[in-house]
Image (tube, rainbow, N blue to C red; front, side, top):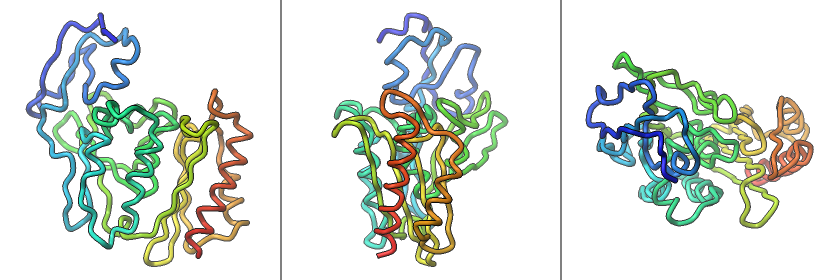
Length: 267
């Protein structure tokens, strides 16, 4: 879609270039930005010209740039002990889109858009990812993605802040992981996604996304029983309601998926 309110386009090369003027917004893949009118936007600042490497493997784990595309996310050569690496493709494939979108949409864009069915939100919360955020004073702050997303199209980003990357720890990547998804149609948008991660020390993390306005993450000191899972899911304070599923249905199927995830990780 043509954005006929946009009159300027700047390419960012340094952090100083990311100081936004009134009406400006950052541009990465642009797959959502150009999908509908953006009447409040008069200028674009291109993040892709910052030259960030899509991903970097280091001793502490994996760093994924905000400008990394969904397709590039599947490129890192996962070490043999990264047992949770299969979640990358499973979450990417839960992102309903054409191959053209897969090669353009970015990890950071998916997180910052903060839609319930955001597949990168599912991945990040499953692996306790931390968002690295550049602040306008030249510093940075770090925040778990699970709290970075506040609700539908709402995040903790403050004016002038830019998501730089997300960090995944080696400990999370080495954990066993399980993934379940349901939708109203075989190739439809995710109505509920449940992820589970069993760490080497026996702790289990259960993540619920797509069915709720914001991600919910539950940490257990051991693989939980069905009763413990039921009590955890019962604490969810809101279930999303749209054409892809009613709240009561989403609550019921999410509980069933959570049982399956925990059963797989207990075995």
